[in-house]
Length: 99
Length: 171
Image (cartoon, rainbow over all chains, first blue to last red; front, side):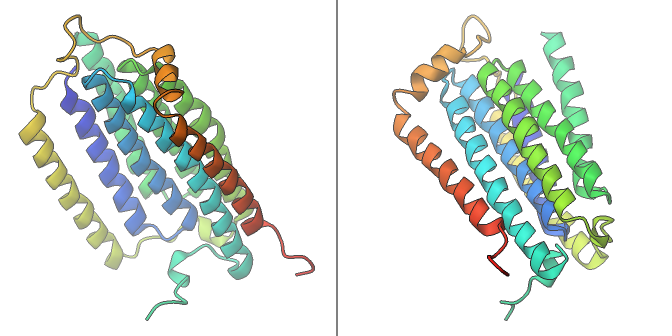
């Protein structure tokens, strides 16, 4: 198998995730797009780990998975708080600090 | 190894299609279910390159825990907004442009550097699975400090999420 197949797939998933973060207005959907980005990174880490025949790629991917789980927990808690205060999770309405 | 290429092609096509649906579908519940397909595809890819432990962890943590968390988040924030009116064109086109430019830069760099590099080029005997034993040996020797730090981080995130999301007393 070619290394580039994995890396290009990671790049495509990353860009789809970036589009989701930029274009979506729903807080939960933005968090899902961030998950796409983190998974694209994990694909790259595991591919390079396999390429160099070390397990370090896998270990870094495991750390990323753990931190992503923590991030989703906190992120959804924030979205929940937002919903409770405003009855809406439209991120465009969160503009209190807009200059 | 033709079979490997075919398997990769199928998995990759399904993943990209599902990922596009995640960021374009109107129904937020459907987005979560398409995300399951993408995450399962990532796990399948990990198994394909011999990263068995990471693949299983991906299934357990992402599909098992994170998706359930997302579904709870969706159900607790149900509102008129889930049929996401979404993406008035004045923000959709800049977002597409940004994503495509980013993709062009990354694909350019990757094609320039890694064309025709075989994934198992460093291994004379072809692809060898990186066993769970190897991963655990490395994780609990060289990476023990980050491992402990991450466990403290998880505890902090757990407590933080509870503190943020609970209702105020008498509020």
